[in-house]
Length: 254
Image (cartoon, rainbow, N blue to C red; front, side, top):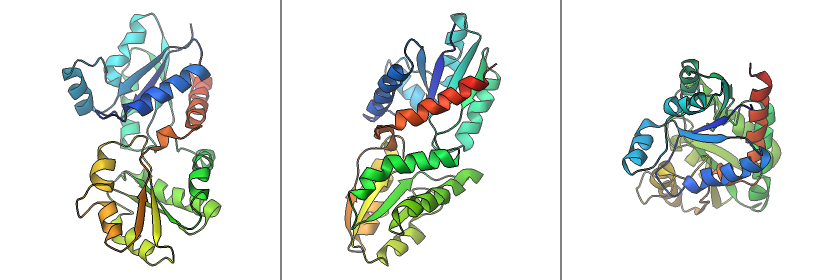
C-alpha cells in the first residue's frame, strides 16, 4: 500500500483557492493512483470554512483519516515557501500523528530550489527588460528571514541589479527598498507577488488604496507601477518542484 500524500498549505477563504485546485490536478497527473489529501495549517481559516460547511481539516485532524484506512505511514508535503515557524510547527504535529510521517521540505530549501524558482520566473522577468522588478513576499521574524536576501542574490545573478526583493512584514521593507527603487534609472516597476497564492496580504498590503500599501508608496514616487495578480503557485512548472520534494521525502520514509 503506497503512502498517502498530505499537502499542507496555510489556506485561504478567497477565490485564490483555485491555485490549490490547479496544483492538485497537476500533482494527480504526476502521482497517478496515489491518494492526495489537503490540510490547512491556519486554524482561523479552517474554522471559518468549516462554519460555512466546507470539509477542509487542519493537519492534526486530517492525519487521522489515512490511519483509519489502514495506512501506517504518510508523506506530509509542506507548501510553505521557506522553512520558517509554520514549517517547524508542522514537524511537531507529525511527531504526534498515529502515522509514521516524513515531511517534505518547503519549496525553497536548497540552492537547487532557488535556481528552479528563478528559472520559472525567467519568462516573466525577461518580458520586461526595461522595468525594475520588485519581488514581494510575506516576511518573518524566524531566522529563515534571510532567505529573502538569498533570493535577491540569485535573481540578480541571473537578471541583474534591476531586481529587488521586499516583504510586506518585517525586513526588507518599504523603508529601504522603495528608496533603492526610486534611485534607479527605470521609472517603471513590476511587482511580482512572492506568495503561493494572492490572498489577504496581496489585497491589503500590496494593491490597496491605503497610503501604506506598496502600490501607493511607489506611485507616490511618480513611478509607473504594474502589479501581477497571480502567486507563484500558478507558475507553469511549479508542480515539478513540489513533486521533487515529495519524491525526496518518499525515499527517506521508514
